[in-house]
Image (tube, rainbow, N blue to C red; front, side, top):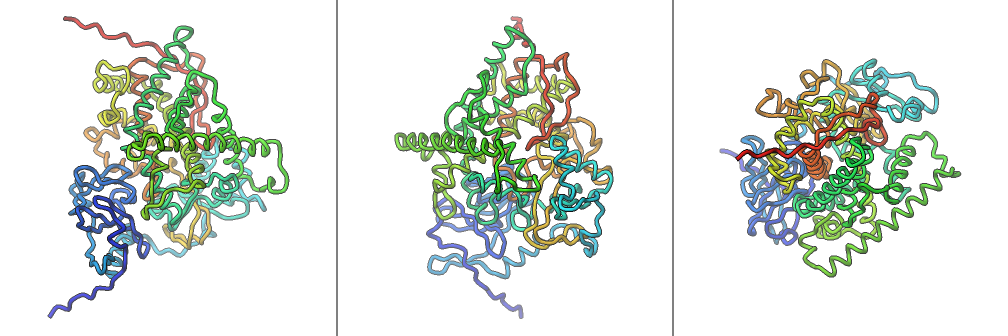
Length: 600
């Protein structure tokens, strides 16, 4: 006779805590769950998307009653858990019982699911080695290998890659007297990123530097603090908010077009570096502040200059071996204090103005038109709003994440398509089909039709990732491959470099956008699973959708209206690392495309 399984209850939440047609994320036994309430019917699913392990509770329930993953918009039926985008990879459903309004699940079922998730990756060889067994560059006392980085700050990623060629895909380095490990094998990189934020956190030097500057934000938060902050930011960068904000992106794109038209009256050469950075800053500041700064075609704004100097100092303080400023300050440290003061005053001005707009127009509570308005209305799973102390660093963090990364990717795209005119031509043909007679992309969702443009962007992000080195620190003793890594060890992931054996891409050095076109690439799905330009897992970049829309919008404007080529004066374009990886300065020539003559 079959023995009935015993139910060992674990309380999740009270049913009163979740509104109809809403969902709440819950973590029990270090397992992520999502509780859904649809028409007073409760469903409990695994909390991580089976695609790339993003937290589903950060997504939304759409009009068709699907849970929409915030990372790649995979959809799952909120009743059955069925995957609406793929025949495989539906959500696991958990049995539950309700007692006096409290929702309980079975501990045994939960732990069984946890074991299945942890055993998903293939088991590796016996893990008995330590960092002492790893090869690596010779370190000097106290400083370790730090001086090698400080002497090559604009090419720091190339130093990592040079060592990888010499010592392999696993090697050790020493940063200021402490051993760390550098990894370039993609399978281990994906495994590590999927184990954030619990087993790994941001590089341990980052948080104290940002806290000292009073700009500790989502980027540097960890654990429950990160989960709470991420919920706010994901709501504020949802597709709903981006659709409301898109007219501002279009307006900024028209500003750039008008600036280039005025420039063409004098010269065909464009200072593309300055213009693209101003364009990207205008968009992210417009989104963050809710007001137009207007640097395109004008001199840089004061807050923009403040911000750039602060970013340079953040990078410097993270890597400098001695925190001298705690004992005495140099002129640049006094300048930093003043820049931070002016940035804070400026951002608080915009926060107070946004609060006043919402007070005068309560409809903005339900339909915010930008990040700052959405952030003021966002709540966590307990229905709590951000405090004033949390709002300022969150907006600062949006500026940090949203300007350099997107601007440098756009610049890399322009660099490649001026070197490959046939690619530029194919992009223009696709853009013309989508835009018709329009000069600009009019509707945000039309960007989804730009398959080849999307492929070019992804190929550029493969070859020139703006974050070529991801710096983490272990939260606990970990096993990576066959190596035991102790708690508080620094781990550096090379998101670009791959040796010949471990590289998953065919013709890895070739610029081949069609590897990202599903109908033309037999390795399309393999390629997708091995590219991580926006990170992976729970800590995937929440601004991915904004970045892709911004890049497609500006490329539509440029290629619909102009043919572009490198300036005759050009020198070789090289890598230049300054918090993110961009190209060295180059100019482009633009030439208007004549409107086609219609023959009747």
